[in-house]
Length: 280
Length: 305
Image: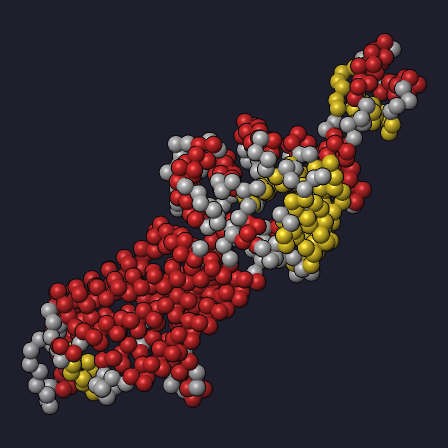
């Protein structure tokens, strides 16, 4: 029943026009970034590296597909969750407002199976959105700009990663990005269980991301203690993969925190949906 | 002996202090067409939602097919087909896709050809691929009936199934319900505001009001076919009443209104009464037998209030 219900959920996602907004938006945004990089990328890079040119000499092609993918990821990692929430935030509340939750509730599928299949379908959607992001940023980026060593500017200084040492970092980086995006998807599905209209959970998810991002950027003692618990803090953990050496302990810590959030949101959603009266 | 299919005992449910159901009890027997009556807000939909596990009652028990619903939910729901309030489907999917989607979670194997057959059966042949959002209200209602029947359930729960249908559609649904009950041995629970519909097809009924069971039983026994309200429109109601009272003692609750005489009587007496009053030079404009269930329903609800 779980697989059949998941298949149903995938059909619903695939059939809804709004599911393609995320893919379309990513295509447009990344195309614009790639176009801008193609036109003025060299000036942009020389502006960034200018402060190091007195002490360092840069040879080879600094502006390459690997760097462009890094820039794109850094620019979009806070915004892509909003595209995910646009679909996942509607998964339960959309059915409540449409009235279909009423007849699905009368079918011999347990409420737990029904909600878990929504989470699973949400994960599949998030996975394909991440793959699309990777394809556009990395594959198209490398096709347009070629490959080469990756120069990353961190708070500690410049990190130069040899070309042959980059691929695995991006593979794990996109896995971490998927985990971050899925935790946001779980949050929006959880909000969706509490709501009976489509807009509420999507807006609430966006508001939470914006709020957490602001709290995360406020370097005041009051918020220091909650920084390590915020989803948004760990959404940027993929960047750690581009440090030398890679701080595996920090990355695993982020993975645990994100998984913790995922289980928390799933548990809350299951409890709420299982005890809920379907009155719509 | 009749086999009990549904047994509702002492069902109560409150929403934020408002008591929607207060100790509701009734039974539905196998092969019944069971009328579920009550004014708006009486608790009909809440009762049906409880029976379909959409709502969890505060107290009371629901047994369907001889098993408690709370412990055998999936097994019971496999054998129930239902429409609750209006039939809502996925607007962005076609009729066929909607049914395929529901069939997958119906707990039974429903083939694609069976889905096409049921769409044909409810009169949606040729519209299988049309998106639900393009359907008229009547077509939506027909699709709702198709989803309720496609997995061949033993018990069918229909909440206002004729709402929004044209006269032919109402007749079709009525005939369908009778066919399901008489030819296929299905049990149908039918909630409707169309009292004439219930009167025509239900063999048993329950009336609930303000969340409480008012009366339950066989329609024929409750309505007592021997007596009904008769209204005779005449040019002299007072004289007419005197003549009728003097000649017939089988009438009751007789009264003269401004333009008519009203009484409760056996309808078989109508020809004799008509003959008597015309013989006495009273002009008869119309004789009306008021709908029995409607009368009974209004009387019962008024006595409750």
